[in-house]
View 1 (cartoon, helix red, strand yellow):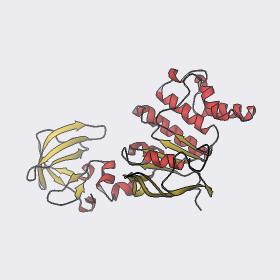
View 2 (cartoon, one colour):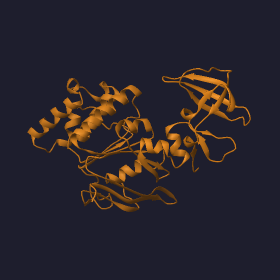
View 3 (cartoon, helix red, strand yellow):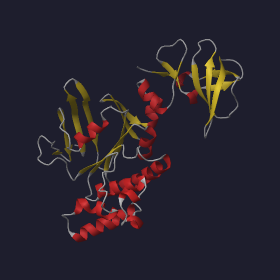
View 4 (cartoon, rainbow, N blue to C red):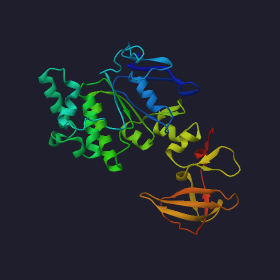
Length: 319
């Protein structure tokens, strides 16, 4: 039996189904990211997994023990499963130290001090222990929120897009620090986000959720090279429709640029990106506008260009 099991979970509100027959099995210490657009059921799934929302059907098991929902448990939630939200939910008039200690109020004083010192050190918050949340940066506040959740040493950590308020630099740094810490602690993690790049910084095990339904699961390479639907393919990059072919596409990075022979187009715009120029090319016969990578930065707006690609790189997708 797997360590953390979500079995056939569904959630409906009158005529609206938010989650459809969702199942997932995780081993102890395993990390997985669930990627989906807003409204895909990600937050609902995590609240059910944490025992904070009543599902319409299905069950949640932690190490063989049933996780009861609010309809079955007087005080919802479990110390073994911690959910961290987008908003930090810190006590504004309590210091960093006091916020981290709140879950440990009934614990032995020696244990409380040991946990506090460890978490302050691990999250680099020792110099900020006496500060209030409003005196911290967004990244520091999120560190306090995560440290607070980890104070009781939960078995499972559920992350509900907790980095959405952070800038790209803060986000990358915090995700790397958190990944190393959680691996060291052996914590089982489910991270939900609408940003694929964020997911892949924490784990290469990804599950795609759309309209409350699991549509594909795999690592980044398998999902990128063998997407089942346009939605999955577009999480990785733009996809260009092939002229005259239904539901057939090619990625910008898989198109080769030449000065003669092939599909004729004209560069109408270009963008300088870190590793390549992104060209917008109008195809002569079909009038389609394609986005194509130019890693050698050879072409400019107004240039005539011919496009080629290998047939095995073509994506044939469901809608």
